[in-house]
Image (tube, rainbow, N blue to C red; front, side, top):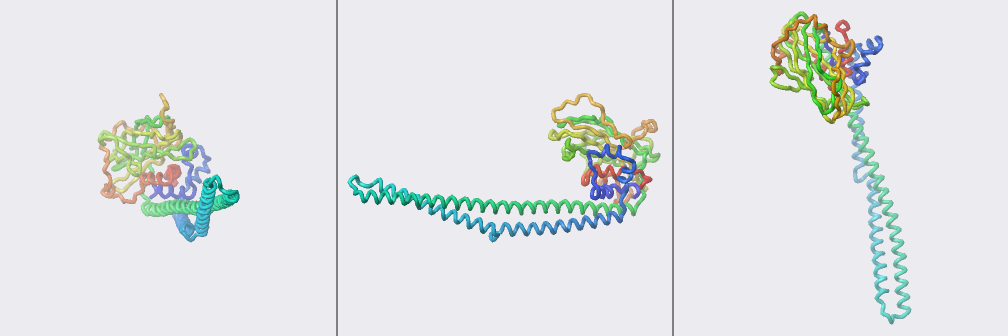
Length: 428
């Protein structure tokens, strides 16, 4: 499809040149035109095939390395492992030294008892013999004590050496296992990117339409952790034709101030309309339901509610909105770009007071002049049970929608999706 190879491009962008998400809003807006053109260049099928092959090789190598690490752990932790044998021998030696020390200490006690129990009229020879026996016992006890301390120190050192070695091989296995997981995720992403690109190439009927716009109003530019805020999303059909089914896409991304810790899971976004029966969670593809029957020249408004967990750290956030549609005649399209609204998350307990609303990134909003749109609002209820209804419209089940891009955002990061979406239909 001409319109949307977003998932493929997003994954490929993440595999070959990951985008720094925090700087996505400003970097793309301020980048040199030549740099933008390079970032927005779409990978070819051949490039995606190469990326998939490389990802598979990397995964196979990771699996092999993990197997080697696992065998090393089995060998290192076995009873026959040299360090385990050494530690056991040292422990046995220390045990024998302790037993000898115990015997020597008892001999001292016995010699002292005999000396103390000598009768007052004992001969000098008997007294001298008892005293000598006590002195000899003490010397033997001192030697036994020194031998035990040396053996105990040796056993402790052998045990530490064994434990350090065990920890080292286990750490290598852990790192190898994590590397395998990452390699598998990259392989799956590359495979999916290639599959989606091939599907998109087979059905290039969709077009990005600047007449379709999504606009957020009322989202504050500063939000305290632990608070909830309501705002609105307006989807306007300025395409000049009726739209049968439209999926509003919404995605929130945030990090801490360092930009390294992603905190998306601490943001919860819900949607509501008069027909929804209350607040609903977005689906797994970050869609706020589906709008049925949006006539040309009309718009549809829905409420959005953002809940920021009290555990969310202070830092920047970006809200992305867009929309994609499929008609019964198999025509499809969507907003040319993701609209980005930047906001700031304040620490829990902060009082932001009156703040300006979040504004779309300059030059990147899929908005249009409201004067060109009628004030009529579509009264068609929002359908929240759209699972399986796409086939009923006659549209192919593999029609690439922004919903797929939403799924890609979860996997590879919103920045990659921005890179993929920021291309005009002419470039496609």
